[in-house]
Image (cartoon, rainbow, N blue to C red):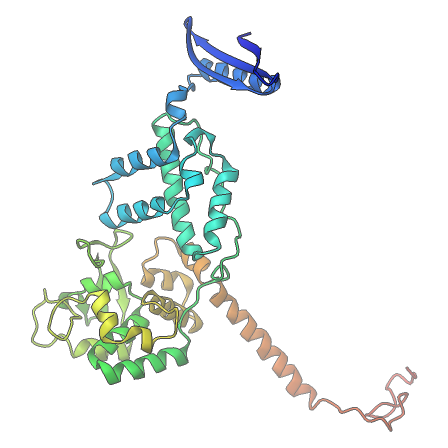
Length: 384
């Protein structure tokens, strides 16, 4: 046994554990309770036996330092947008979490952090932050800083985010008013807003569209194979795969007027001066904050398109393909509330049908004999 008991100046007993390997002390720690000291000692010797021992000099590194090393290791290995998103999420980690030793962070600490974030951020944003955290802890395991990630089996807490009950997007009336107002300001750019609502394209995908991506056979469509986020280099789509998105008659009308006499390499949608679209100027020129309901974003136009397709009875797997989701389960999860509407509509239709068959609801009459009822004697012959 390598536990040494000593009394400090206040008279309390402290228990110091020294872990030895090959006659050399490789770790030491002091506890206020002997049972904690014994438990820690057993864990350390077990780790030594199975080759899982991590020196305290590594496991005691604060989370903030591990996060910095993680970001540096990812530089150039992932897309610039993903790297910056990870950096921004880690930059917002509160001090109480960032200063903790990486080995001292448990599931309860992560749940506390995510719950705090859910009180002020959209659930989708916190979900992305959770992904970043999970990648940091996976990096720590690979680098032998910890033996197990505290997020391996962790689920998102319910939180109290106002957006946790499903996506919020334009109503048909809101979109109609938006388009009407934007057409009085910049008709050509208003078509961009409408096209996004008809095709469900991401903004980065629309920016990257060329004339050569337009197909007329066997039906009007656009081929989506690139994405170009504002401020970043052009790259492949989010899934790395190309997809075909069909165009409705109205969507084709918007496209048709932009392809004649132009080169295949030209951008399909441009500013009024012929330059590639950019999110900031686009919102400025269409007076986005004035013409769009508060809280609505360009990405909500994608949600509007997907919701419209599902309400029209388009199968989920087809909607998933048009949206460019790698897994139809993503579509099911994001638009579960829309899919549930069809069941409600069918149920209400059945109830209305029953009401029509039953005829008008009888009105109460205080002068009627309660034993007879409004339609004469009860058919059973019994008085109720």
